[in-house]
Length: 180
Image (cartoon, rainbow, N blue to C red; front, side):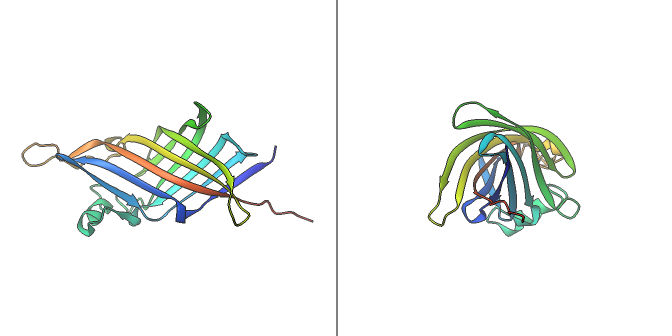
């Protein structure tokens, strides 16, 4: 079966995170990211996903906090400008639910993670394209990636270790070039 390439539609996609801060939560997003999906035909269970986010595009709606997140206490954007994910297996749970396994690399550390995927389906759009959509959720432990900042002088834990991640992504099926 022929391979199908799906290109990210960034205008209909978003990547967010949320972490506990003292007694509440702080959320943010990456504004610059890219992803591609390769499937055998339109079979999502065969999907191979590659994702990257530009650390410098992080936004929590607070410039001072964003600058801190980019420094060595957190993402260390100077030495590690991208966060990447490469899937290794897509496990079908039900018609619309999958478990996506893969390697997440952050701050030069690569760890295996499993993310929940809700498949929104495949449909034509009004402009003659074919689109697919996904909602991805999961949790990672920031300390697994060397992000240890967060203990106050009083010993209180300022930041939770667990970071919730979520993404909504829409992809456009790429038409294979015909060679003569």
